[in-house]
Image 1: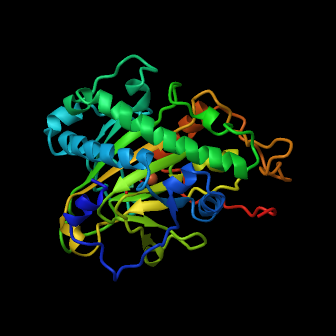
Image 2: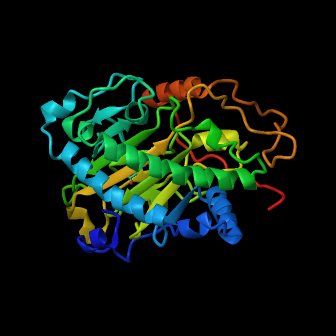
Length: 352
Ligand SMILES: O=C(O)CCC(=O)C(=O)O
Ligand SMILES: [Fe+2]
């Protein structure tokens, strides 16, 4: 799906809508330890909290792209392939976040029902970190390929974490050790479907938010994702589209990275609007691998001798809780409408 072939099957992204130009990083260069590219990565995650990652030109990226196509097929099989009665069997009871979310289950900023449906696959289930969970048939029969996709995506996430360790002057493996694949974390592979919206009544489908975990690796073909540029108020006219690029993933950092880096890394507000131009009449699918911290790890900043993570300043407080407690608190605030979504981080760093 995220390959050039998939892009050729839908109308092009129009050139007359406001776009947020993201730096385009190359996975191939990052794997070969290109120092300039690594600096660019750090800069991008500090300034924007987002980057495009070109998966082409290396085995690791190309195989992820190929397997992403299969994940998009599964997304279609779970969303349009099953009837609503079947899907509703998999609606979780809060605070559980995995399983099916029907269209309209959440609200947009305007208090209107959302315009997407999603299925969140529980990584801990797929990796047998917990007893096997009930899943709809298209998930159950593809457990092996989902496991393979998550493993590959996780490895790319880990590579990014290692680069961030270097720039934050943390011992190698510090960030990765807080989000291992074989430990209970609540990480998820989210499969989303946005049906085309009626002409004359097009609006936000998924409200503005920051991701609450560590990193999200996102694939989509149709436009719709929008970013609120740093420093701008959340007014309608300020949002900018991200233009999906063939062969690239959109990568963004979540709130946990802001906590651990003492505010140096950024978690930026984003939302999903309708697909622009001629794309608006097409089904939009999206695949988001969202990594979360292991439940038992502390959320306080990783300040240590020699690291670039700043010590607490007067009036600042460290989070004195585990990731589980922190996620539960945030989840409850979001459900109660008390989490006033805002971008976080991007704090100045003298050495750069
Ligand atoms: O569908 C998209 O493009 C974005 C989805 C998203 O932001 C999320 O799942 O957190
Ligand atoms: Fe998101």
